[in-house]
Amino acid sequence: MTFAIHGLPVARGIAIGRAVLMAGRVDVVHYFITPDQIETEIARVRAGRDAVVDEIHRLQHTITGMGPKEAPHELSALLDVHLMLLQDQDLIAGVKHWISDRHYNAEWALTTQLEALSRQFDEMEDEYLRERKADLEQVVERILRYMKGVATPAAAPAVARRPGAGRQQDLGLEGTTDVPLVLIAHDLSPADMLQFKQSVFAGFVTDVGGKTSHTAIVARSMDIPAVVGARSASQLVRQDDWVIIDGDAGVMIVDPSPIILAEYQFKQRQAELERGRLGRLRHTPAVTLDGERIELFANIELPEDAAAALEAGAVGVGLFRSEFLFMGRQGHLPDEEEQYQAYRRAVEGMQGLPVTIRTIDVGADKPLDDSRHDDAHLNPALGLRAIRWSLADPAMFLTQLRAILRAAAHGKVKMLITMLAHVGEIRHTLSLIDFARAELDNRGQVYGPISVGAMIEIPAAAIMVRTFLKYFDFLSVGTNDLIQYTLAIDRADESVAHLYDPCHPAVLRLLADTIAACREQGKPVSVCGEMAGDVDFTRLLLGLGLRSFSMHPAQLLAVKQEVLRADTARLAPWSQEVIASDEPAKLLA
Ligand code: PEP
Ligand code: MG
Image (tube, rainbow, N blue to C red; front, side):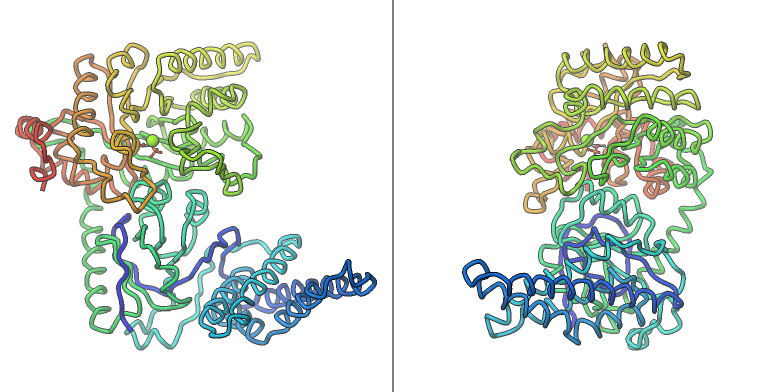
């Protein structure tokens, strides 16, 4: 039966594929195997299962030696249930199916089958049987843990061949050798998302998350359709269902009828044509009708993203979110050498164009790793985040500063400091940068010149922008956080997403004043939040005097198209009207 689930549009485009449900187990590796690896993968699962069976037998043996007091009857009954589940034909046959027919690696097959069986347990009338789901989860967890301890064959992230499926014909997809896969999860952290960056998924849907949550931002950078905040999507969709993701409308259609499918296939082709048309603008200079030259920079998360930035025709990197180098490392932070090499790769990758490296911004919805969520802090977005975190751990911060300074010996580097609000923090940060230089001098180590800028993303910073200008070479407005903190709306919380409003007059006035102050003093200013890559705001930002934008490479050509059609002289008075209005959105529509 066809039905639709609504969420928030995050990354544009249409994806049509089979659902892969990720039921909270994103730590499991997912990759396709080649046909000659099928037997090895099945053997890995079998070995894991046998090891767990042995472990349970040993436990049973131990408890039979205990007195009845120490060995409660429930424990032995529980172990019997676990043994029974481990021998269950549905588990074993299902895992074999995912490995042999779908070419999933062993861990992926196991978690996929767990998900399928869990659904069956949920539907059972009998409460006792329903509760066995938890036991099944435990035994699968034990097998996975065993497998983790045993060397896995080298992951093949995107092995070419994917098997066809009968349903493809029903859907008119015959002839396709690859079945696109769409990932559906309750939640994905930004680090999880990053892990999928090189993967095979054609689209993403999550139950939770806001439009400018960092998970959404990484999804957008992958340039594949994504919907977040789709509430119960992971409950309603079944493993392997056919789904359509409409990333423009923020909708997922499950089990589409042939008519709906045909309509979306048409839209998909239109989007591809549009992409092709935009591609022709790559080498066109970004100059407005009245001759204003506009700089379009790229936002990147990893050094390897520099290639996409160049490909899109970016004039440099306006925001390198360095924190992604630090995530998901179970506490082992990258040392100076590793950071230096990463920054250097980004700098060299940009082939002489400038790279703006932002100092680490962890905290809030970007935990260092998932296991380190700190529930004690109820308002992490207002807590020890970004520069506050860096200043609280000067040794860690100095390590990063030295690495950035050293990378500056290889090309044009700008350093961007995030989440500043106090003059004291500014002074402290600048003195640590000097200290890092002095340390490198003492070591006799080579480093390069850098300009230092600040992000304007806390209302306090926007209000005292003229003070900031005394200390910094340039400013960059982080509209994602500026909106979050001005309106007191958690950007990662879908339940307040309708109140997260870039067009709020307070936000627009802070933004306009920041741009105006920089222009008055002749200092460079850019916007690197998601507003910069949203074509709905390009004309307004140009009218307010902005000449430098930084966005994901995938958004760059669409923004350039807007720039080419704009006349800043005519937009300026209109923009003043917009920011003076009580309801700017009406004028922007
Ligand atoms: C912003 O806040 O607008 C920004 C660019 O930084 P981040 O999204 O990483 O918080
Ligand atoms: Mg920010």
